[in-house]
Amino acid sequence: MKHSDFLKALKTLKSHIITNRNKQKILTIPQEDKPHKTYCTCKDSNGENKYLYNSQKEIKYLLSSRNISLYSYPCPYEKGWHLTKG
Figure 1 (cartoon, rainbow, N blue to C red):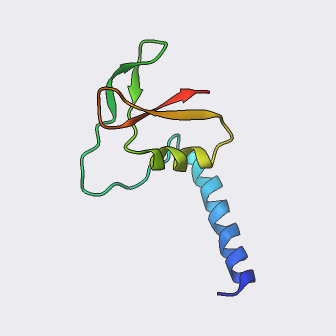
Figure 2: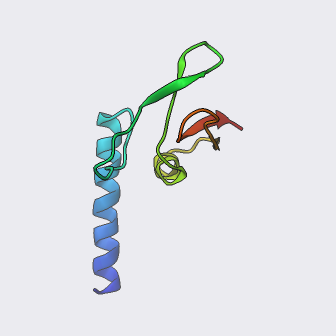
């Protein structure tokens, strides 16, 4: 693949991501055939259930398209990850 073709494909991908970002609130990575528990018993500062992510890779993917400063940490009760403000 030529460098110019690669850059053209990259621009197209970026425009698709921007378009879809406006349509979706949360992007998710397609998971293999394993069930995913969305929430756990952990609570946030407002008393709401915290969202449970499958992996740090999923979190990095979600945060890569946003300019926000959050950190991940393992859920102490479930097999998953949470986000916290930094």
